[in-house]
Amino acid sequence: MRILTPEEHVVFPLPASKPVAGFIAKLQDQLADLSGERLQGIDLQVLSVVGPGADLLSGDEAVALAQDYNNAIASRIKGDARFRAFAHLPVGEPGLPRNWNAR
Image (cartoon, rainbow, N blue to C red; front, side):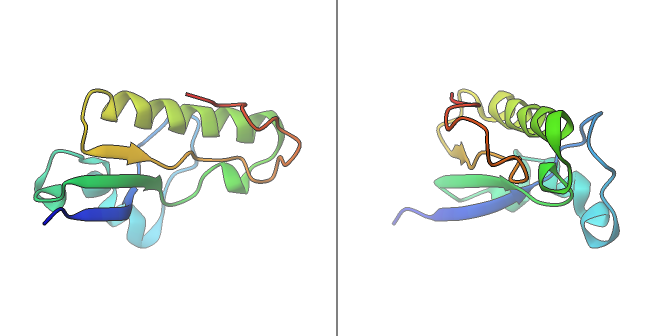
């Protein structure tokens, strides 16, 4: 039997991102670790960003942070067939073209 996790949360520290706080801050190291014990035994994992992100920003700042997160996720999962990822979107910027961050 294959095991799929349709939404596994991750947090990566990025220079432009707002610091995470509270419960997520306590788990940040674990949420950034894609090779550790918490993700073992799962055949396919779809990653998504949790915590403060582009949804809390606007304009160029939101777009830049979303692109940084998407680039960070893409670089960490490149070449590993176990991982896919939801795009981190600057939802406060609905006028962006649909392919603004196509991979």
